[in-house]
Image 1 (cartoon, rainbow, N blue to C red):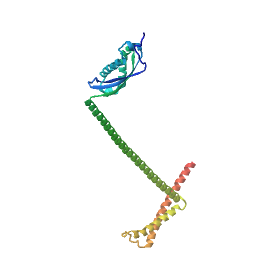
Image 2 (image 1 turned 90 degrees about the vertical axis):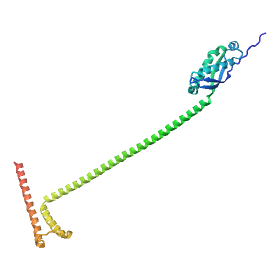
Image 3 (image 1 turned 120 degrees about the vertical axis):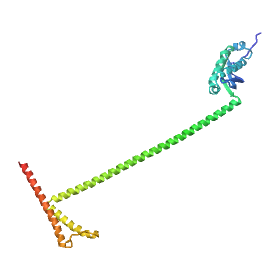
Image 4 (image 1 turned 180 degrees about the vertical axis):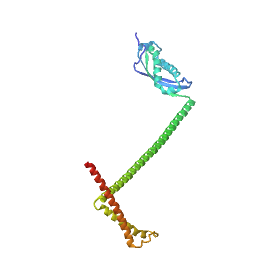
Length: 275
């Protein structure tokens, strides 16, 4: 009579890979354990290709593959490249396990335990790295602060110098405008005075005004100074008046000569124009 010799489940099975010692490329002994996920894909091969328990054979194969892959990388890489390490272990397992009707789906490393001395050194290295990063960050912060302070002082000096320059320019413009306005006012006054002198009776008025100023100045001289020099006949008011009139007459004669000369010139110009 026929009988069922082997019964296999096609569900995915969990195979615990017990901890074992593996030596890395840089000769560090590590204790590693993991979990393998696999399932039967060919019941016939699983029954007759290997012993009664194909998953036990896969477990031992996983340990061998894990030791082989750990010997190819350094200690630092074991923590950085777990995914690559797991993928290589699965590939090595399937190269033999498919002949047993079993396929490894994935392998997960659970724990990697270094020796106590190595762990202490790793802790010191990690602490040193943290201190190094802290010192770098602190120094960068101080540098940026000093740069910001220097830039602030520079900008302040630039702004102050620009403000001082603008102030000097404005002051110079104001002084120039003041000088120009005074010059223009003086020119206008001289022009008006010239027009007044050239008008009828203007020269006579100027001559009389000069004589009045002479008498007025002479009168103020005694009030404003304790020591004055006077002519021998300065106490004679009639002579003072006579001197003022002499100044007036002198100015008048000069004015008449000027007018006569101007009239001759005008007459000559008119004759030249007629010719």
